[in-house]
Image (cartoon, rainbow, N blue to C red; front, side, top):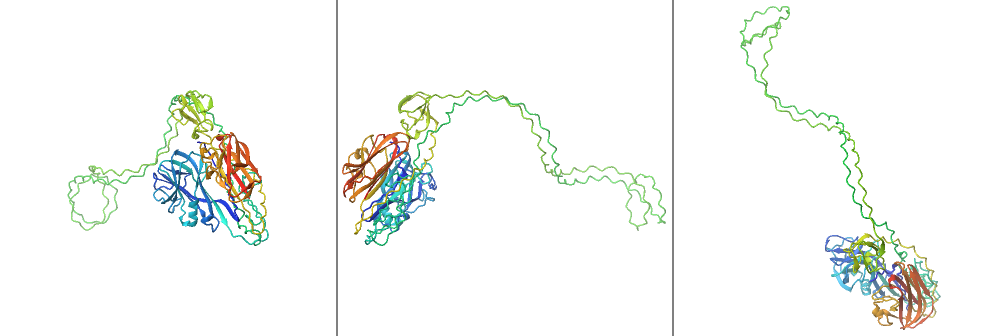
Length: 637
């Protein structure tokens, strides 16, 4: 299945003029999208770049309908389409789209507090990664408009598939879910009066298809002068037909996206890395450097606490006491004689009764010093003083000499690089580059691989047993510059008087090639308002089903037919023919050739359409592998 992308920049408003009715499309705001996982039941995953569905994961999306015109009723919701972008398919299978039955918030929802399920909308099986899938959710949106309190958004679940869709936080592929709503409003016909002033021209849209139709980009719908008064300020009361709907500048088409992404050029790669050379031997260990000078002595630690006082030494034995001499009468104090020689110390006499204190006699000679008493027991050791501060580190020793450099390993080599072609056989060591047209699986395209062993056509580069990746695909290039603004469409004809109103319809739709079983140079039919070719088996014959045509709602004359074709993925040449068929006969047709660029076609050919005619859009191309995106518009008034 080929990869396809809808050119989101070409999503324009659908205009249907019936009586004094006005139909236009608007995209409402995606206010929340998040996944919940049974593997992480209490974790909020609202900020992830993808919505995970299946394998224990459920995704939720919620849209704000308050941007619809005030007073919009369910009966005025003509059509609603939900479009999602399939980022990756890990496991194919069926996905169920349902409505949510209770409130939730992107920033707080998790598996444990997830909202209840309301009812199934549809089931589908994504066909490939990198494509859009769309669903008709008209009845769901009508129900939300009738009962706004019931709008809790959509839920995506699967019991068999494992699929990733883009979320609004995705800044790589950047395709958030879109809810496009077509509104038909009906106003009462005013009294006939003078022709109203010409409606204001809508703001010029970006990247519109060049041409007089003005349906390209965000250019406002072509104002019908007079009674219809599209987009213009309301003219003086009544005059021609119903008062034009007051609105600011016409239904603004969705902003055209920045120009379609140019084809990614092959990333000029850094050359393939050669095999790593053998590691050189370790160099000889250098001799040990001289010992650094000894650091200075550390600061002296504080004095330790004083040790306990040692016990008193044993008292020496007391000498015999000498006899006490008689106390002589106290004589007058004589002159102090000279100090005599020190006599031997006499034994201590018996202590006599203490007499009256006599006059101080002269100092006797100093007795001989007594023998040293026995040494007392050693006192307990005092507490250890605190460690002194560490001395300064000695200088670093001299660095040893550098060992000899090991021998350089041999430079790796690689053979020639060829583009991979499905079905070919490759020898071990062959390097291939995966292009978009050589049969490589999508995930391997843009990368280079080397054959680990001989590989036949049955072993493509997705088989890691036979192939090893040596260079990953480069990042996508930046978006191309915005295309030139299309010329403003011509002013519509003045409405007729007498109470009559202009009638007609307008359609615009987008699609991409590569639908199921498509074949080159084969014509396919589709409804112009919602282009979908279903499959080749059911779209090759005019009038085979309601998907292949629409019934003209009123009689009218074609005023403009245009289309744009963008060959956005590579530079493959493709010749495309798109036309309009009335009751099986081609009435309008154009052919362009793309080659990695954008091509447009437009015509103002007038063809009469009768109410009830079967109208189809036809499509044929010469190269279905060119990966094109298309926008087709038709105006009949």
